[in-house]
Length: 495
Image 1: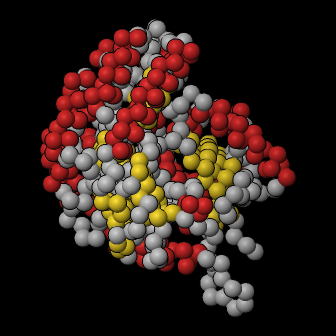
Image 2 (image 1 turned 45 degrees about the horizontal axis):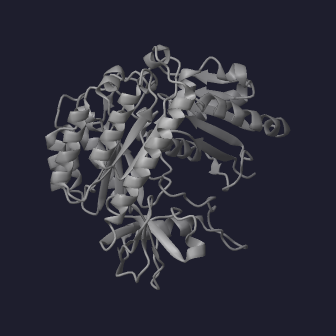
């Protein structure tokens, strides 16, 4: 009898992506195998790991569940599970709206998924189990990482902020920090497996230490990462300007493997709107941080999150955001139209902005940032960069005979495929010849190719998952090829 297959569909921030790696690890530990790419609901178990930040999250979930209902009716034994932030929020309504769902679980008890699936199968009724607080730090759970060469590492969960537009703290709970020794032990274990790049994760990553009573714990952790032999690249997301102190900037500048990249959510450039959002900084403070980072790390690429059309936003408020964008000169920005979320203070505020006004402002902001991104990328032309080769980042690579990867500052680089064999995780040295708003090109000859332990790890994983020839086989081949680690984007509080 063949093993049952599973599919995990992920929505939302990097924390959800990492949680999905854990859900995959749990299911594989319970004997399931990953469904082939493009299965499209044809797996024995389909898990939705949901996000509650955007207004259309509910519609997207129920639309997808609706499309699976006829498939399930034709396939006895198929199971559907819904977890994540939306499940934590809508625990009482999911099974009512979609009675064909078998399991509903929350953000605090993802480790229960295999048990809940089995219980639903045996009892032949839906299992809804939502924990109100964290049962165990998720990093203790088994994980099926999506990348052989790059990995997420959670250093905290939850958030102590009370931003009026964000429902995440209500769903993820108060901040809980891991012990530094546990974090470093996980990083060292990942490096031993061949990982060469890690991204430290937290809802408010640089508030790390508030739960363990050390205000400089985050900068100490960055410096400690610099002592991990074999760890080539360290990134983190998403920080909060309130907690971005000078010791963090100093640690970034002094630690060679901490990359010259910073994602710093602005949300609004208007002091009036920042106050209404309960963001504990103002425009001057934000721009001061950017100035200090650029002084310490001249080639740093800085990205941000911005919300357009927050309740009460006037044209003058919006112009303050545009001014801040011009001054900060972000490498890129994740821009969002304000999305009303029931349960947040902002949802009931006076001064809700008409959709057409929000749309017009949004288009102006996008056009400005596009212009700045292109100008900033043009400054990269002529520079020689070490690019870590990625998997799946260049959709046109096959047609253009190029490969793709990430520069130290996380800019996407497409480069001419060298004659030498190159694997994801290897590092190439190239000269940038052209810049577009969202990527760089290196059209000349690759200066050098450095084969790495990370490339070895990718090769080993692919060899283990390649289909075996017919005939006598030893062991069972697993299914599927690992997808690339997604590039960092805006955090949970982005919308």
